[in-house]
Image (cartoon, rainbow, N blue to C red):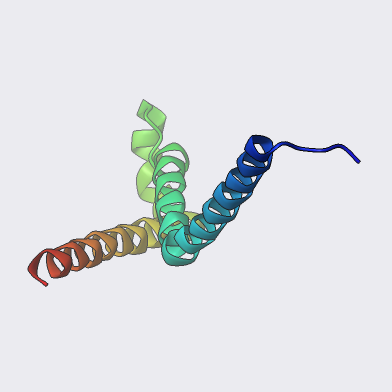
Length: 105
């Protein structure tokens, strides 16, 4: 069994502590903000898919859009974009309120 001097032992303890803290705060961040990260991702993907699938940037896309936009996949993408933007707005209001509370108290 190798022997470690005091400095190496302290380094390993510090690294283990740092790993534990990082893991703890990472899990806490995902627990607190995970749902918002999912909504941000869904809104981002939905916005790009809507432009690509429902309102293509071509002359034919312009003439076809009145027929494509009412389709179920376009309605679903609009729902994701609308609810995603509302959720993101709520996230910022909640975060701003929390910061104001911390500043006042």
